[in-house]
Image 1 (cartoon, chains in turn cyan, red):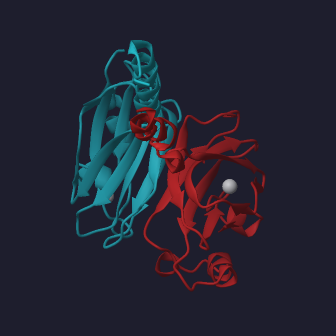
Image 2: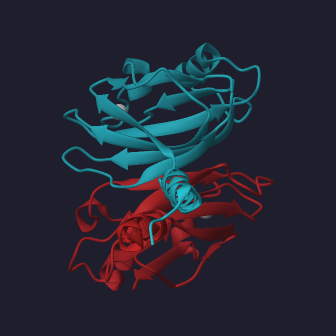
Image 3: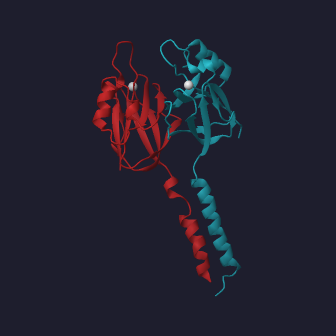
Amino acid sequence: MRAGPCGLRSWGALLLVGVIGCRVSAGPREASYVGRDFAFRGPDTLPPGPTVFRFKNAGTLDHELGLALLRPGVTAAQAFAAERDGASVDSIYEADGLLYTPFGTEVDMGLTVDLQPGRSYVLICTLEDGPKQTPHVKLGMFKGLVVRPR
Amino acid sequence: MKARFWPVLAFAVFGCDRAAVPNDVEVVASDYAFAVADTLPAGPARIHYRHAGAVLHEMILGRLREGVRPAEFADSLAHGRKVRALLDGGTAVLFGAPGQSSFPVSIGVTLVRSRHYALWCQFTDGPDKARHMTMGMFKMLDVR
Ligand SMILES: [Cu+2]
Ligand SMILES: [Cu+2]
């Protein structure tokens, strides 16, 4: 009636499937960023692969986390210069999305991205605090993010 | 003796958090409408955005505060009033340009049962033109 070595092996294999299966279904990695007046705090580099970006507004104003994939060959410095000068960013960004969090609120949604190995992204807040006010990007709410090679 | 292995089997089969597997939902933006199911199941979802229009669009997703009626929210949007107080927290936004058929960024959200979510586009096609949400780019999603 005892489970022989083969039996143990099969249960072990089953357990392994369970554990690996759990790891697979555990979902994408999370990357958390905090916005303050006027900077982003969070990782500068991330590994490639599916990632959910989360954003918390820890400032005293409305902020957003814009996430943009830079076109190949474009640097974060070039993207910043375009944003600073109010130039068109059509030739700079390949895709973008954002999380908007008014002051005193939270956003329980995330941006899910399959981070591409070796590619560069930028985090940006383009909000202004009123008409003719300086956009937050010019005050420091801009951050480059590099995805490590696979 | 084998009974002691049942917990292992149970873990292998049920141990994974099946609820963690998100439901993939595609929203197609055209000029000027969002095509997506009216009702969505509660739980984790990935909202994908596909641009099928000829002009620039955005897709803003926000959850209505409890007690806010969809008609009240739609009316505020249509009249250009601020909707911040009607929303439960912040919003997520995806942008799409003509020719961008598949979008590599999606919104990860845990849809809350019995709540209403709004999708809208605030873009215009130029100065003095109507905002797209007043031209049809507004959609209410109910979560069951
Ligand atoms: Cu900001
Ligand atoms: Cu639009």
